[in-house]
Every structure is written in structure tokens, then in C-alpha cells.
Image (cartoon, rainbow, N blue to C red):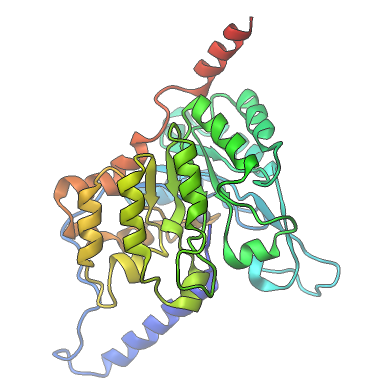
Length: 364
Ligand SMILES: [Zn+2]
């Protein structure tokens, strides 16, 4: 998860300012920044949080309404595993996790909120949402116990694990515990649960730190992929974050590293959500970047897109439509897979309750 809304809002403000300035120039000089796509895509949103860092979010019927508006057939939904503290020493209630110096703590109740909200929906709406478990501390070797307990309590709900927040720049620095790694023992225990129940894992694991212009942390996700070939990993934002971009602009090594990882790990899937859109998939003129088009065509089943919505859904349709210039550059079949089908293909074919029934029989 990485939704530095304020940065994005200021980028939008700058865009509006640019457009207003453009109005004063002759039309012949004013180039439209983005041509509307001729294709209307149907989407799956592979990355949605139904609460923010204060565990607050709009109700799920609002999400369904936003999905209807944006041709979004399906969506992954999860909570947020961290809660921002309003610290005694802070005079104002913070509005975002980076709003003040107070820390964040691991918050398991987020999963119960998701399960209860999901269960209240009518069946036809439930069929379009795919809840993932995330409310555990990824450095705690008891994390797998929480997962098993939630699977037992809500067996008709869960379809995946994540977004797990391991290395995540400033967010990690504010978290009141050790730094989580994709390859620590607590996470290995989590992956064993994922393998047992056939659950995909959406994993946030930054490829590097804010300052290092090299793939400093890539071995962590590599280890996890190699040690758990029976688990399908979705690498959130392809290892990037808005904070990395703020410090480094663009990671020049990202495409090469991703090519190498995909060549050696069949269980790697890639979430292209918003921090990957620019400057990787699209250049500054909103044109698809050839190297990324080629990579996605080479691995047409491995990529998916998401909004990374954070408890509010009014921007979801717009966010997914921003991918249209990139999808237009792909073959029709690959575009359909990336926009919609690849995420759905990773979900368990049967409800968890079937597996639990078998597990109980084995014990008897
Ligand atoms: Zn996220």
C-alpha cells in the first residue's frame, strides 16, 4: 500500500494549472495530454483497501456503485494491517500516516471489519468482491495462527492474503516494531498457510531504499519466490512506491530486474498499480513505453492492474482508465488479460470451507 494522496492531489493541481495556462495558447499549440482510448475495457481491480490508516472507509455498497460506474466487474478487497496512532503529544488528529511523527501499530481487527461488511452484501455483489486477509504483524511467528483462526471463523469469505506490508520506506520507519522482510521466518509460516489453502499473496516489498540506486532489497522477494514455489505471489507496485520516486524519480534498473525475476520464477505475478503507471508504463507524453509493452507481451498472464483505493472509491474508474494508453499498445488478448482476467485466474477455484472440511476429516 502506498497512497500518498497529497502528492497525487498536488500533481493533479499542477495538471489543472497547466491546462488553464494552455487555454491561453492557440489551439494549434495546445496538445491534448491524453487521447481517449477507442477501447472500453472491462476491469478487475487487483488492489483495493476498504479502509484507510485510521481503519475508516466508505461502506461496500459505495464500492459496488463505483465499480458499476467504471466497468469494474471484480475487485480484490482488503483492510489495512496498520493503524496510525493519535499520539498524546500531537495537538491535531493526523489526516494521513505521514501527517506527523506518531507511529503505526499492527491492527488485526481490520480483517473482521472486511469479513462482516462482505457478509452483509447480497450474493450477486459478493460474487464480484474477493476479500484478502492482511491483519497480522509480518515479523510475528504467530501470524499464521491469526490466519488460521480467521479462515476457520469466516471460511466462506477469504480468497487471498495481503496486502502484506514488508519493506515500505517511511511507512516501515514509522511502524512500532522490527522491519518486516518478505523472507523472514514469520512470513515463511504465512506462505505455508497460503500454499495449504491455495491463496495468492499480494506482497508489498520495496526493491530498494529511498537513497540506494540499486536493487538493495531484491534478494528478499527472490528468496520467498524460490522457497515457496507452491505460492503465487503478486508483487505490489512491482517493488516501487511513491516515496521511492520522490527521492529517486525513476528506478533505471527496474525493468531489467523484473525481466530477470520473471525469467526465473513462474510463481511471480506483478501488480502494476499506480506508482508503476508513470514513469514506467507511460512516458511523460502518456505514450506506452516499448520495453514495458514487450515485457508484458512476453509474460501475458503475469500482470494485473489496480487502483490502490484507500477507503474511498470515487477515483477508481478514473485511475483504471489511465491505463488505457498502455492497454491499447498491447495485443487485444493481452490487454483483456491484464485489465481483467489475470487477477481472477489466481483466485482459489473453490471456497476455503471445502479445504477446511478436508483438513478436519484428515485429523479425525
Ligand atoms: Zn495498497
